[in-house]
Image (cartoon, rainbow, N blue to C red; front, top):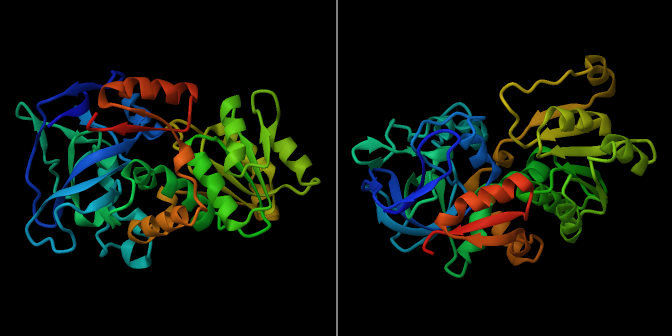
Length: 367
């Protein structure tokens, strides 16, 4: 099959035509990928900021059609439209039985690039090819456990639905599931890319009274207003924590959702929230990043600091809910897609990520 392959660290992806993919095994399906969003996490793996073996096929925000069923698969039919999650759920581990399916042990494949049995189902010239971010969807086909795919109605546009697989569930989930934004709350979102705009929309859906957007890119700040941002701050010229406190009459923000996840933005988030407020870190920091936390402030001010992985989402519940919100006109997916490109254009899409150009690029796999 054809795929976009990264052969080693700090190199651009190349399109190859000769990746071999196996038939699905028991409990697996093979999906013909039609669309895959380009997420900033892919860049982290290319640059070595997150671990992955090479050669690797990146891409983890995907949708397509079921093409083949493994032995014993009964919940899918060939031809079903599906959104793919970057990890499956075993339903039996310590985390799954406590309802924390997003922390399932099957998520180890995100960094290892392999399926739970240690295989990838991919090779090229006899050499193993790895599954980037646990999936490897910048390719014509992928094999996934049945728990990593969610069937959607036949009239679902897959070029929009693919966004739900990572960025939308992560951002909306950070607001609704992790921060638990409530009607009338104030929210500040740091970073207004695809995940940040999804967090903005989650806060708006929850009924937040004021949503402050922080981003160094002017076009993103202005675009964010259409999604629900009420106030914008340029962190290059202003102290966003100080301005956030001013906007709330000296009280501080109820919830900070940080999709940038840099030491400076995390520190700013801590300073921006009120006593009893929450800081939710959604982005991926570097392995060497550290912050100094004023412990007495946590003890006396009851500020709450937490991470958020995949928006604490259970895909089988969350994907239908997000689609329902889109169909009801409460979640804007169309405006999030600011570019569509082919597999060969993925390096250009990564350049857009680096410069903050646009919100989400969708790769049209067949073009």
